[in-house]
Length: 376
Image (tube, rainbow, N blue to C red; front, top):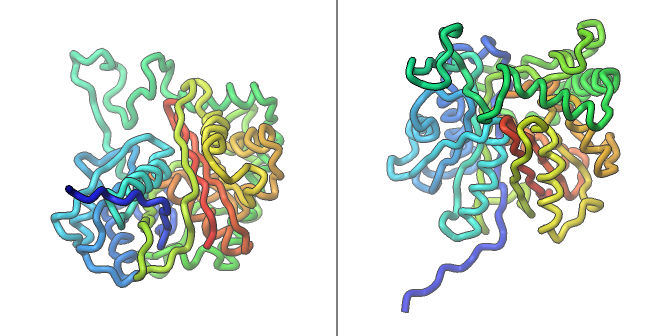
């Protein structure tokens, strides 16, 4: 009789790194996102003394897409053995965190023992696409597009702005509150940069590279419009990649964190940012750890209102949210953002010497993913 595979209960994070986050048409304007990811894969091997045969799977997220299976391209570019499989996922903004959930599931099922997950994005090199004339989405007034519709009933080209407005109105979040939060995000990110809190988690292609979007001392109120949601309270598009080394119990490697639970959920596309609420509720319905035990929270700041509604619904102190600053300061490289948020959460827990942390991110089309970790 064939012996049954042992179900692995523990999933560990052994390493987690990102590149400095570049502005669109900034430091990575000529670099494929696949090559940013390949650079990080190579660094993970070097940092952890692994051969190109020890990684068993690559799962990377992307939203804009440069065509083809980008994760496979990155894997081969990094010099991993051609026998190692790789696949690319697209759940828009939540993809980087969703890759962690998928990777953890493979490990728990004992299908894999060691893999790399994460995300990559390039606004600079986002392809300009066109529909065939017989496609119902074809529009004679538009020569090309970079993103397709996020839902069949989508109206207009900027559904997320409307969704953010809908949620801000529903939860009575004011523009003034959002501007204060956005300014504070830059302040906290600048302090983190000055104190080198993220240095162990950042690998640079060039020595002079650094996060390009952080603006210490900025007063966004001076740039704000009368619109409830505008660029001052929204994260800007960026270029970056982030990779995380996941595995089961491994005598060779020392873990830095443990994945406790995860959850993904869908919500109404016209209230997409609200997904962070429902993903969090779903996670804690199935977790032995309670919300009250969580020390720090990394809530994606694609819009400034998101951490506000999270704090309001769950009664979380704002001082526990995004302690190193958030996406409003660092930027929002869609497919990589969820993985970056998780990396910043790990760094925050290490810096503060705390135990439990929760990362949550919503996504275009009305989805969200949450991951709960324990600092080791």
